Image 1 (cartoon, one colour):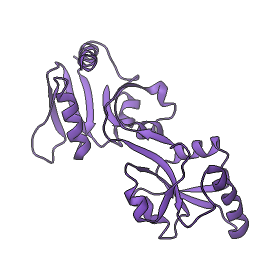
Image 2: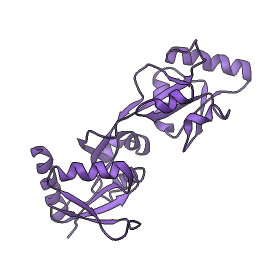
Image 3: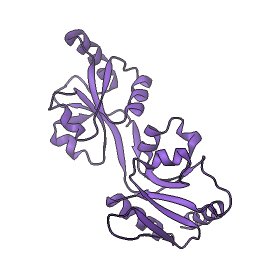
Length: 232
């Protein structure tokens, strides 16, 4: 049979917007059972199973080929899948869930206005304190590659899985790299975004797995979903 497995975010505003996006294309996503169950169904296209996962889990499942299509952020795909272009196809950007992965430093760093300034400060910081300047983030792969490309070398990344903006106040980091949509939380924590291009401009996107089994019913369902998207 090999039904197409479509993964969408399991909760929150991202799930609601995903459901609305598919509904506008004649595809109904319905969560079944109680609110605590991660199960659902798809109406409007035959042989499609709905899988409810966190947005952070979807990249891994796409790369492994355990799901055929999934909705998640561009930032998560590029962070979590090495050589992501060989593992997934970008099918459609969905127009919501916009956010930028940025670098931010304390506003009181008046002499740091761009990446060149940051590179100079990291070298001076190590000379003065005998340790590397710490940048808190959960996007280690993306940030490391971005800094390498821009000539920033004398730093260390420290892991932060929540409330990254507070790490500077808590003295566990000197700078941060994090996702932001409005910048309000950064402003509240007296941080400024370095105005160089963002590390990644992200939004909710429908991806397809290159490693899934597309034989039979899954391939037919895929074509019908693509036709619905193209007609919208």
